[in-house]
Amino acid sequence: MQPGQAIKDANVTMDMGIMKTTFNLTDGQCLAIEDVTVPAGTFKSHKIEQTVTATILRMKTTSKTVRWYAPGIGAVKTETYDSKGKQTGSIVLLELTGN
Image 1: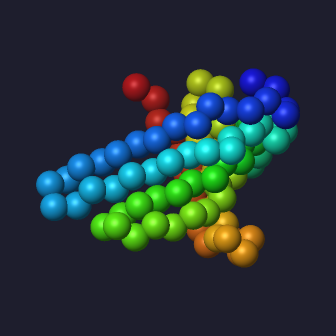
Image 2 (image 1 turned 135 degrees about the vertical axis):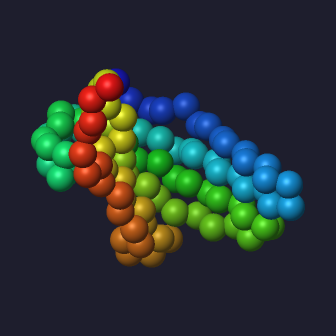
């Protein structure tokens, strides 16, 4: 994946009996390849931005996510932003454990 490359749209539905949740990921694009440092270390990562539309109990929310994916590791950092661009959450990889 290279900077500027588009990512295919995707969706996920979780049905837990009385509660159904759907996530639609759209407008994905690789923004850059960069080093990102988190508690687990420093990783050369693909910086990906996507729009996420979540429907939970018939309530719909839309947000932007920026994720840093390290090849062979997965997401090492994620930031979530509301419709006004305010950061509403973040997740970082704390440590890697061996098998």
